Amino acid sequence: MKNLGNMLKQAQQMQTRMQEMQAKLEASEVEGGSGGGMVKVLLSGKGDLRRLTIDPSLMDDREVLEDLIVAAHADAKQKVETMMAEEMQKATAGLNIPGGLGGLKLPF
Image (cartoon, rainbow, N blue to C red):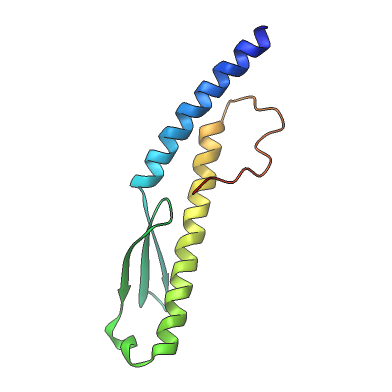
């Protein structure tokens, strides 16, 4: 019965840490860029687009601009995923979770 009590305590700790992590991610912002900074994308820590900045010199070449926007978004998204993984590691530090997280994906 002692193990069950410990598991419940760990589950409560994990829930609290996950809520804190989600709040921190929501308040965070990550910038990605492409074209040497000519296109910049700002995403929230949850991956929501907050801002897109385009150098005016790119307005004449639509295809290049489209490619740079996609690349800047991919750069920012990769940074958000890295930040999420780091925060998840911090949130679960010290918890004895049977089987680890096993590739757990966040719901956002």
